[in-house]
Image 1 (tube, rainbow, N blue to C red):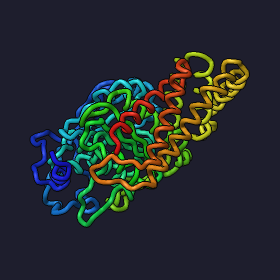
Image 2 (image 1 turned 90 degrees about the vertical axis):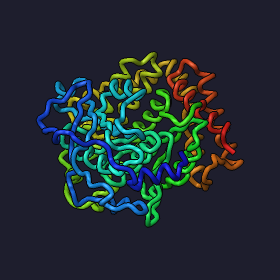
Image 3 (image 1 turned 30 degrees about the horizontal axis):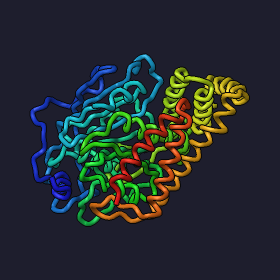
Image 4 (image 1 turned 45 degrees about the vertical axis):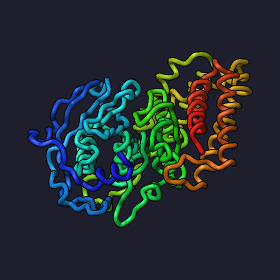
Length: 440
């Protein structure tokens, strides 16, 4: 389907919404499956809230009278009930055909203990998609223990455009992953969502090299001026990205949020952003600092990875990461964490004196940092450029810089294949080689 027609159909409500005949909102006391799916029914909380803040041409509130009977599938991680003090990050998923699933994302999301919300009614050619976003978000933040500031969204094609709207209409979205499409558009009066994103919300994207929307990767990288952005490419068409690509982009989102965050950690007892009161305009695009519970979740993940570390360099790498998480999240206020951190510092100091870690720092570690610096330079250069509709185009200077970046990552992979940097380096190099082969 033509991109403009596709987006217009999705955003204007020319087709009837899906889903009628359901029972009633699911009670907040309803038992929820752990490590399994629970279908939740919910209603729009604020009936005065409408499409005014995201009004597409010819679209009015009467296009969708459905404010009840929305649904999402809820996944809770293993151990949710046992660990009553834990809070978890949440990923919202939207599909162009509705009834979203985790797909190849499931293994990582389950392993790392995410709460997952899969939208049901939100789909292309439906006027109900935004209501589904409102209803599901406002229900789940009350129903389960989501860590403040640790909400993310992803989707394919029209679902990617839905994901791009989340940070505009609801607070506390740390990042989005647009798969096979860029941001929603076609608003009247004209509105450019790329310009509305703030530094607090990160934007990642994935595209197959034969996808007709491939050029939109450059729109994301170039037009989203304030936010940190990242892209990955794979051989394929208009599809959900492969598992390895999803993992690479989720690594980037998590590392950007917890290791290099522009958002300060929320102080314990800080007043959260009010979600279910006030008008939509007062709610839009508000950020929530990452809470200590969010950093604690990431620290638990890092501790698991530390237990799986192979060799002294990887162990030292993870210890440095964990200490950064403790510092960024101000987790040393917890006595147990502070004691663990002291032990980690002592172990790291010893590891740094070993020949193996010294050699890693001098060779593979330095090469990886140099490649990351080259990547940051390339992304900054792309952000200064101008995108052309329908074209995956880079300037000669950009191509030269990207080629050098790919070579830098490829060198890490080939020269130091046993290092913990080899895997991440290969994914970046493979990804951008695919893009450069298609770029004009």
